[in-house]
Length: 382
Ligand SMILES: *Cc1c(COP(=O)(O)O)cnc(C)c1O
Image (cartoon, rainbow, N blue to C red; front, side, top):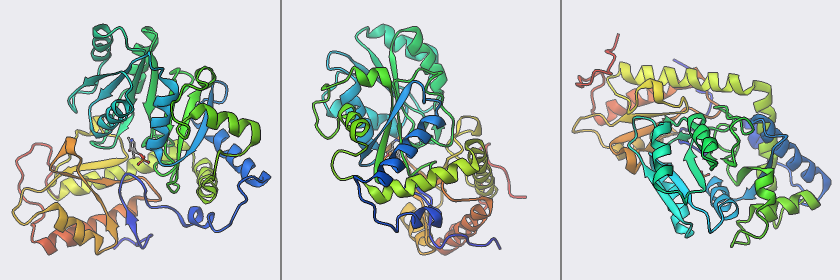
């Protein structure tokens, strides 16, 4: 039986299972306006730029809040009111991007696509042709609502060809799946500390093309959600506007050191091994995944609910929670599924622990495992 490495497994797409070293970094109080905290913030900002090859072209702006706050601040700050934002929506987080844009009254166009096939250059070209007022495009990279990895490079090429500016919700993928901000000429990427960076929540991060941010002075109608003002203040003083999440930043600095020690490619390879082990294990039990493997981000597994009268998501969830394992329900855009994240301080042996707990939970519910499901993607139990 595999050893349990964590007393509590948080297998949601953030926050997630965090290493003790990261949590221990929060056991110190920092003065928010003293040199050590300013240096720590600068170190983190620099490291995140290095991760996306943005040190020459982009700036990193941390903002109090969760990643969604940084996205809304980015829309306010970067998309002028006489511009128009095209939202590519093929899942729950695409829908959220649309909700934010429409919620703040930004002129918005929506390219609504099914989950599959993946968006193509022709899809995006056609949407731009239909509406010449579009100036900006936003797309979600790893669409954690379904598990799809959207082709940002293809969309960036269309954006460049048509003189449009591309913003990317890289919240779930950043630190795992590489994105080159300079090569793709991204206007902005939005980043979370508590996904592939494996830190704790409490700060949203925008990585913005410097020339775009310089041109955005006083554009945001919000005082709090103003990336330009936050950036200028940080640059001028080394301080955050208002109370910074000092403990969260200490954790993130340590998480960045761990990330650098492991290396981005090795981290992604570890997630891929977790994902493979979990997908194979679930299929061996007769369960089926929402997605074919080729289009799935190796960050999260979306699984069809078993078709059995004794199954309910709530009962399954409760049975796992009693074992200190937390999973996530499916999203509106993928009803009848549950989701298991493989990001975090997790290795293959943890997947074994999780699969064992799933076996116990199904036994408790009276849902037989290895049941016949008529789906060709099922790999029969060996
Ligand atoms: C988690 C997530 C978000 C939201 O991040 P918050 O920190 O909860 O605001 C946005 N987009 C994607 C793709 C995500 O996975």
